[in-house]
Length: 336
Ligand code: NAD
Image (cartoon, rainbow, N blue to C red; front, side):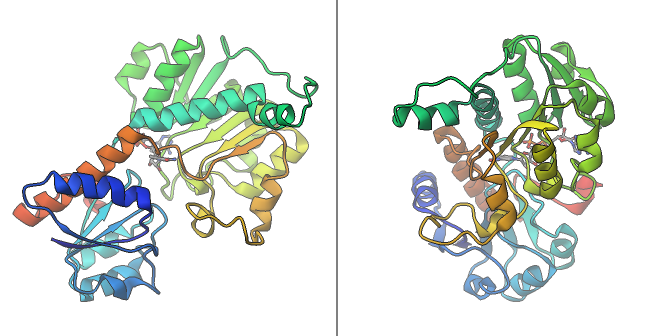
């Protein structure tokens, strides 16, 4: 199949080329560094499929033009699919496929890395020691054991976080419309969101971004949390309302914040902008807090996850080419 592969970095090419070379019928992958959006959609001309990542924009206008260019399949290299207008894809007869659960542990382990780093101020200690400052003031942490962790969304990643935090000796409260049996067996208590917010000392978000979860964590939600709570978001940026979070940090309502995702990350993440002036004042404000740790959407970025993403993406392309159906399709009907 001829595939236009958008938003590619050298590491994407490395894993996709390796997986493609293992296929008996390899695909013709045209790598493009640019993201897919209204300005770049013409670059897909001549392909039957586009392969895209988390910040590519597949709104109704882009999908209409992809259909006009003969694109039949959108192959996401991600688990999340909030950047695709599924209703428009259906209207235009475009199949959408994703890579569910390529390595929930990769994201879960990064989530816990953020918890530990924030709690023990590893990010600050690293900088201090390099400057010859060995003072401990400001580095006081707390024992994670016996703390209550609130997990919002106990799908593949949420349950992997629960497993790790159980190992730390934490209590688990969870909130999800679908109860996960493994979480229950671990002793997790399912409670309504408001109760989770009020009970947990560490809150971690693992639900998808949908109209229902957009700004799930807003000023009202923060007001229900314990003062000084630790909040971690490795799901999607817009699950939290950034301005409300900043107000929460300023007042001390939020004691630690770990973000791997950001509402407006499309203009920032995955690029080296170190020679440029940061234009996003909200993001700039976040960077000023000593108790905020931000990573640029790297929670998925492990050897195992990249290998699995490449393999499953190419299998989606192969199965679609052979049978007209991709292995892991997402559709508006499946969500209903
Ligand atoms: P999953 O589909 O296995 O689990 C998501 C869970 O969220 C489901 O159990 C679902 O019922 C639950 N949910 C839906 N709406 C909810 C709500 N309103 N409140 C509470 N729970 C709700 O997905 P997953 O593989 O665990 O991934 C979760 C999310 O993590 C993805 O949608 C994606 O946005 C994000 N993600 C981020 C990275 C990263 O690198 N930072 C990587 C992979 C996935």
